[in-house]
Image 1 (spheres, helix red, strand yellow):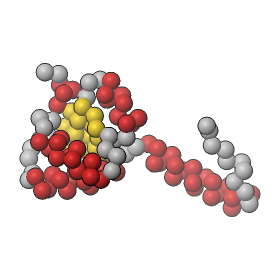
Image 2 (image 1 turned 90 degrees about the vertical axis):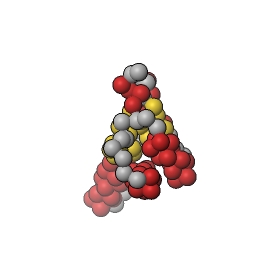
Image 3 (image 1 turned 30 degrees about the horizontal axis):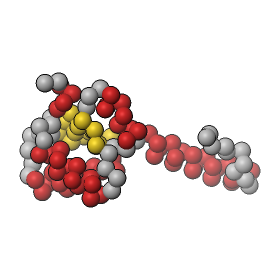
Image 4 (image 1 turned 60 degrees about the horizontal axis):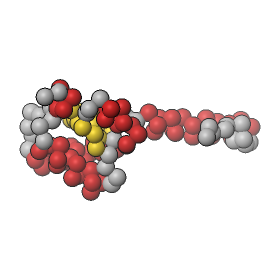
Length: 110
């Protein structure tokens, strides 16, 4: 049995893709109900470690409390870099508007 088979990662599909390539079990819930089902599945499974995107961390902690505290899996939250990037963009845009009266100097890639 691979050591990666004892790890689960929960987050957006594009964020967990690299883990999937390594053979780690990945889950990408679309909403809170799906996240609850995923949490129940992970908590019942044979996982030692579960990395959870901060959006779903509260759901996992709630399900863990209902299931009763067990030694495994250890649930660790992580933050997606995109939320930080979006927040920085908003702040820079606001500063540009204050300084120049326009946000036309801030261009988004894509």
